[in-house]
Image 1 (cartoon, rainbow, N blue to C red):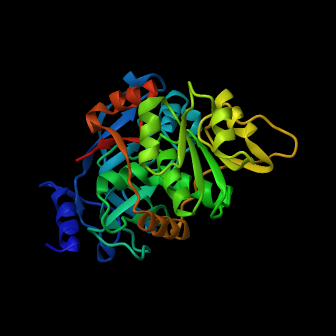
Image 2: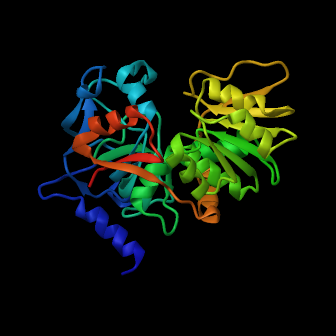
Length: 350
């Protein structure tokens, strides 16, 4: 059966009897969708117990927005931060649906949207989306935050990788400008971002020393393409770096903070550089002459086009550490908080 027909059937399968029509111009691709949806949301800030299953109205897409019937959603440490300190998000009123990324099929498009149609397999990332997060059966968001799923990638993998892959590639390309032959340390390489960053760095021709947690983490990152690896908690990072790069390291992508990160930075050449995404704590200590770039993942058509090209070229593997149903979103966050997650945790929505 052709892929396009499969995608359309997946979208239609989300439609229940006795449905309402979602907002949007029907000539632009709006379809009947349920009036309400299941969503994992919070009614107040707090621990994982405040994240419970709600029955909420399906968001209505505006003229420049896409409504996605979600298949899967990513779970990250940022979700825990939002649950505990909602001040990270400014555009929300309770109940608040958590989640910043996911994948599914297009259920409706606004009248001004071009390039997407009902049934398309898509993935998306949006921080503080005014119409709610991705821990839900549906999400409505600007079309500029949405991308087509690369050929051959499953919706589960696409839902697991959106924000992580954007963060990983932009760290390698835009924050560090990694060139072929350069020596790079990825600190925290076994996590959701790091496991993708090392594959993109390998694609760019870097020589990679990865730090990971535990023997299983070291084996994990070596399997994904790290040239060498060291246990970031119990190994001697400085000794490993001297052995790997006697003349010094060109760059460090910092995906975790603390003393182990400082040991990585000690291995840099005088002209070395460091980059880290927002949320890494503690941040790298300031050092004279050291180039340090703090960055956030950006979305947009150009960013997604470059990412999809890199995904295909790298034959990207998206490691999924654990899956939880939507009703167990709180347990998924507890697993995230417990640490030692090799890859990404996902919620299966359908």
